[in-house]
Length: 225
Ligand code: CTP
Ligand code: MG
Image (cartoon, helix red, strand yellow):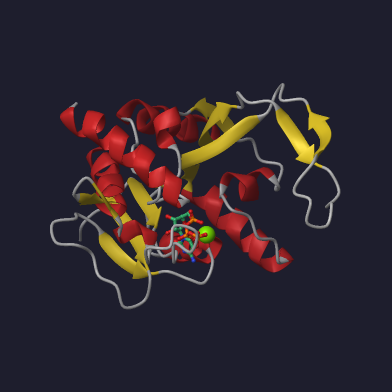
């Protein structure tokens, strides 16, 4: 019998990429490599196994060292299915759509997750923040209430968890009909601590068509390094 893996990377990659508009986003290529292949390559050296959730009917590109599960209708469903597919004691959940993942961030999130039970990469917000005012019927968005940015962080992935902590958080969210766009939020709502670990500007999520130009420019530097 082979021993259970100690650390698993779980990669939700089953989204349809609606905002980008080029089909399932994980398979979109930047400078000759898919977002999925880039994310797997960044994580594989740090973990015992990589499991990815793909849209039904899709298969892994050749040479990508991972196991596959079919994803669900939401990101949260896909992560839940990934969790059920591993026995690892510690899991790192990372969006396929964030292909530029520095090794230092992986190590820091993993270490904080092992210490505290849950951790996420995140960045202090740098921009001035404002809530848009009431809709002006065709006149465009208007300035409403400014929102102090002090103490606000933009949440990224990877997010690391002891398996039991994240399993419990997903079960509770499911019972309560609570849906979130990340996993650390599910753990935090149980009252469990979540470490904020400094992320990286290069960890931006490829979301809209404009992000591809940025990703292509960054790939030139990243791939040379
Ligand atoms: N994801 C997933 N299963 C889903 C929806 C999303 O595994 N049912 C994954 C995506 O593949 C992506 C990550 O969750 O790696 C973050 O989601 P997002 O950036 O929203 O990607 P998409 O849902 O594919 O994009 P869009 O919302 O524009 O359709
Ligand atoms: Mg989405």
